[in-house]
Length: 191
Image: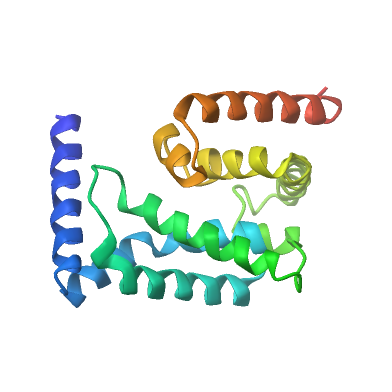
């Protein structure tokens, strides 16, 4: 039954994309609503600033709207195409040389924590999250991006490979090395 539901969702998404390609602004609006959170979270984690993430997210969807007629349905998630556009915008932003990557852990952790009524749990969780985020930031840029796409955004190997311009096997190896590096970095904290 689950496969049937996935196929139906896949078919609805394809129909939505085709309508958007044909100029249906409501269809593009539905795609915007569906993928806004994914694109924003991807950009925010990379730039660490809410206003900048909002600007780059808007620019991502503006570029997508301008280029929707160039999009070719290949059975892949439309979100991967949007994240690729976002990835390029973030890269262009940092290549401009005017900005540095700084992410305030206070901003990253501004979501409510489980057990928030228990201050000790909130403190321990915040410390662990801070340490994990620092360890992820210490990875090389490719490993960092792989970890963010796979685990923070929950993308598949194929989607991550598409976004990063690599083969699935290369993403598996990159992910494996990243996880090993994280385990080594976090071992003293977790022992």
